[in-house]
Image (tube, rainbow, N blue to C red; front, side, top):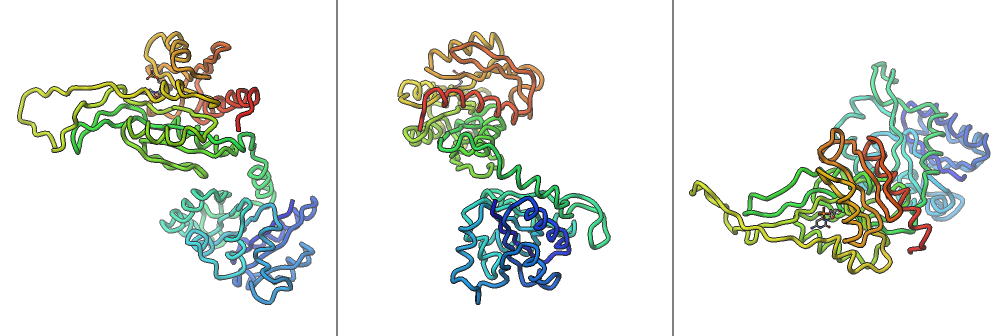
Length: 394
Ligand code: C5P
């Protein structure tokens, strides 16, 4: 592998000397780019000797022209270690005022950063917000470890040991990309059907299952569109479309339907909506209030009817005769798979972080024990892969 190691000016720089040495020792090619303050801790010559490659400290006066672009294109990944609060802030803001940040902004390959700083700096609102911006953009963050910090206090902020950084880098770069080339639409959350401008009819769905699927699908390399009515943190590399009502969800899903290979409807779509939502807030004048409800469109049924090459996966949140109902639904809606769960059993269904599911396809039903929603997402996507391998969908 070819790595660019971006070194910013933190005391943990001494570990990065060893990190570069480790990469070199196992045959990786490494080029180092340093910030000005990094050169106050160690000289570029040290890294030049270890990497046996030129070291960049400025965008000017390099042997090559536009070296920052050429370096970014040359490597397979860039690792910034230690990443100081300053560099993290600059990356989040898109500032490129030195060699390191200019190479980083020119990167089209994976960018991995290893923050290291005092615990109060690491926990500051600014660093937290900047890291979350970077995460959203798909930057991989190697979490700092806890222990004694250079400033003498205990806490989180230590640069992990070089051997751990190497391990993490390998893990990130070898992450399974088996869904790469597929575009997957995932829906999540419970829809909200307006009663009046302030009230709505909703349900207990949190959106956690759909978000977990979107996250894992993106990690597997798929292009993911998440149509959601809940407002959890959007996973990295996921395009999010926010909706409220079933009708809005239908519009959003249909507008993307032609372009996707897979739709996973994890959303709890309301079956009914208020026939005529009031334009004004309803006053509490009467003792009783009657709302007339009309049936919502069944999005998945419609997708099943319009299906061309897409794989369709639905959910069946039931409270009784789960499996029998799911099999009926699989046929009626022309689906490839149903994920059935009894939302009344403990550790399954709405709001919680775990789920107990049975995957139902035309080949039969496979029950799974209680798992985290992330594990359930993996199981669903692995099953999806067998469909995709059977029929090549683009
Ligand atoms: O028929 P039932 O509503 O139980 O089906 C549940 C499945 O269908 C879920 O995947 C859900 O997202 C989807 N659904 C839908 N449109 C509706 C109701 C449910 O797409 N109006």
